[in-house]
Image (cartoon, rainbow, N blue to C red; front, side):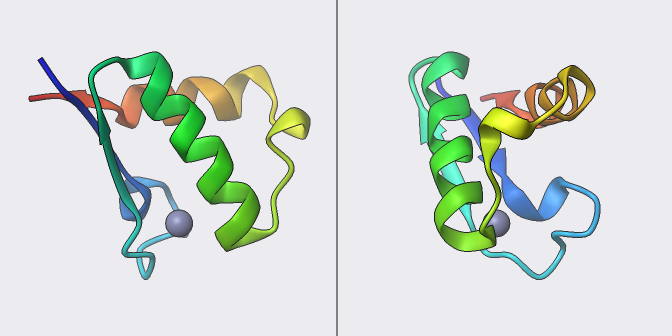
Length: 62
Ligand SMILES: [Zn+2]
C-alpha cells in the first residue's frame, strides 16, 4: 500500500507540481510539511488542526 499527496489538490495550490508518495500516511505528512516549508515558505508548526485535517484528507491510498 502506498499513500500519495498532491499539493495541487490543496485549495490555492493548483499551480504547484509537488507530489509525494510513501508507504505510510504519516510519512507523506512529513514530506508535505517539508514541502510546504521549502516551496511555500510556510511554518507547519503554525498549521491549525483544521489545516492539518485538510492535508490528511487529501492523502489518498493507492
Ligand atoms: Zn506545493
